[in-house]
Every structure is written in structure tokens, then in C-alpha cells.
Image 1 (cartoon, helix red, strand yellow):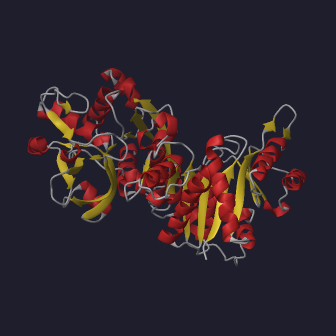
Image 2 (image 1 turned 90 degrees about the horizontal axis):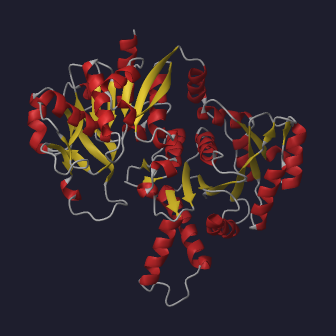
Image 3 (image 1 turned 90 degrees about the vertical axis):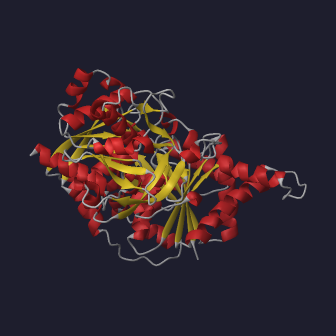
Length: 534
């Protein structure tokens, strides 16, 4: 029987519920259990696909083409699993389904209400995930903060679900904040007490508390929290601020959190195999050197907009026992050629991430040109490939003013154009080329050697592609198309063979990188950067 673990958050948002969920998933997986994790987000958007990265951070894409919350990236990276559409649930998708059923007459004339219709649909999403994965444990993270109006249907659904599943088959974990007052040197427990009080008023008594704190929680404070929040003393866990999120599973394991969870769910504990994770954390704490990688993008004011890219760079650095420092560059700051030279003069590599819109494009083109002309290791992702092709077409092929029709509909040389199947698409949400697609790599190319195989599968999220009318002209001038769709019609990877590493891909490799298994393209970048540094 599947056991259910519900994770809520209180006091403030952005407490790291996703990291706690991912860490617990890691600890259970390390014991040989199967785990699935769901994210329930209370916003009305059907998915984050149309939301600004400044609002929501990165959009994480799954193999089956779902545009999801960035927490699913943490889930995949920590548990080394691939998730699907069913793992991301929003209020918007729930209400959309209920309204569509009502329009079809499936409720037989009944008045459609939050209870039971909305809550029943939420519970159905839990059961759908159980049916699809049949895991030993299903961890469900509820977005938002307890007390928010928009999350109430999810909390009520959990209350009902726990009753229906019976005692001993589910637990509730509440992640909360203990503010530390430096002037008095005290941790304050009242906000957490109040948060649990609100949760209990909704009908849910948490069995476990995970307390975010900048300092150690002393025994008497834990006992106070346990007493006033009606939880066992050994069910109050400390989650201190740490330099790396990858330290969190080991910190929780040291407090026997997984053991307590298993005991509460009447499951036998097992010895965890965390040797490789411990080795990973040791590398993080004791690097043999450092590298600096410039990340030039449009949303650099919010690091979460490129969180998978950043984590992938870190993973690749750890493969070589190196710490990777990110130099954040707003691509608009690279409009001037001389300033671009100054900004990139002290870095070991350059990454141009994905994105949309014309803002900052000219700066990205300048940065790519500098990297190509100075043999600075470069990796372009999605839009990064399109910019690499535009830059090469302008500055090497001689197609003055070459551009993408996304940025200039009337460009004389549309080297990047809208995909054929996108020509008549109306609307934005969920209408791009999304999800995992196969790619055939060119024999002897740098990317083929990096992957060590000829056929790969990677995740996509884009509308535009390299225009086939210009492919031969570009290749004849020296920029090689080293990865293509199986039918040969879509350019998936380009590389400049004269440089040590000047590679760009139309897909998003950052979504498949793992802490214990860095992605080949990021490893290729870091390896080239190390060689250049030597």
C-alpha cells in the first residue's frame, strides 16, 4: 500500500518546502523504497508556462512535455527520477477540469461547488499519481503559506484524503520558520506556534515539524515547540541555513528524520546507502580549485530563472573537483563591444541560456562573438543556439542583418524562423515544441564524443528553429550542424570545430543533469574551461 506524506509551509513563503520534500525523497530512495513527489500550486494559471520568470522563476519541462514548477527540478535531481505531467497540479488545472466536466453535463445538473467537486478533483490527482507510479511513498508538497485563501481547497482535500486512507497511512509535515532576534540572541517560537494553530483549525494536526533557522535549536526550545504544537519531541527537526542545498539530506539523516517518518507510517527502517551523496557533499565542501562561468541572460536579477542551468554547471564542476562561480551578466550590458570584452575578460567560460523576446539579444550576439573569436569555451541553450547561428551568419557568412523572425519579421536573412507546425498556432500556453525528442549526433563531432553515443533524447521548449534554407550556406562556412532530428529536418546542435568548445543546442540539457551524474554538454564546457585555464 502506498503511504502518503503531505508537506505544508507556514509563517513565510520560500522556506524550502521543495528541498525538504526532495531531501526526504532522497533518504527514502537511499533505503530502497520507491518514491513519487507531487507539487500542488494554488495559483489559477493552468501551468507556469505563460508566467514571467521574474514572477515564478524557471519553467521546468518534463519528458512528457509538461511545463511545471521549478521544484520538480529539485525532485528529479535529488531522487534521480523522471517526473511527468501528473506530478505538477495547479488550481488552474483543477478548476479547468471541473468546469469542462460541468459543461459536458457530467455532474448531472448538480450545483458545482468547492466541496465536494474541487476537493474531489484534487484527491483524484493524488490517486492518479499513485496509479501511474505505484510508489511505496507519495510525497505531496502544497505550495503557498498556511493561512492563504487560495490554498484552502488543497488543505481541505488533504484533510478528507487522510480520513479516507485511514490511520497510519499518511502523515503531515509542516515546515516553519523560527526567527532569530540578534539583539536579544533569541529564537522565537510564537510564529511557528501560530502557524500550527491555523493548520489545526483547518482540521490537520502535523505529526512532524521541520524548523528553518539560522542557528542551532537547543533542546529546551525543541521541547517548547513540541509541547505547544502537540507533536512528539523527536518529531521536531532542525533545518539550518546551509551553503549548499545538497547538504540538507545528510543534515536531516543525522537527526533520523526518515527513521521517524517510517515509524509513524508503520514501516520498517532500512540502512540507507548514502555513500555517493556523502562523497558529493565532501567535494562541495573541499574543492581542489575554482572556475568562473559567465551566464549572460535576460532575467539575471532573479537567479531562480536559471536555477537548472546553475545547478548543472555546479554538477559538472564537481566532476572535476572544482567549484563553479557564476558571473551574472545582464545581456543588455553587452551591447557595447568594448564593454563585452571587459566583462568576459576574466571568465573561464560563457553560457547563453534560453529565453524569449528581443530584449538583450544584441548583447548576447556580442558575447558569443567574443567567445568564438577568443576561443572562450561557450555553451548555448535553446535561444543560445539561435543566437549562435545569427552571430555566425552575420559575422562569418556575411549575411548582414541576419536575424530571427521572432525579433524582426522583415529581416532580409531569416536564418531563424518559426517552426512549420507553429505557423497556425493560436495562444501561448502549452503550444510550443515541448518534451523529450530524439536527436542523431554526427560521427566524430565534439558532442558525439561527449555523449559517447550517436542517438540521444533531450527535452525541448521552443517555437523557432534554424531555417533550412540557410543550413548549407552556414555549414559550408564552417559552423557544423552536429545534431539533427531523426528525419534530418531540424537542427538540434551546432558547433564550431576550430574552437575547443563552441557548442549550442536547441534543447535544454540542464533539465537532465543530476548531482551524481553531470550532463555531458556541461562536462564538455567545464573540461574545456579547465584546459584553457591551465
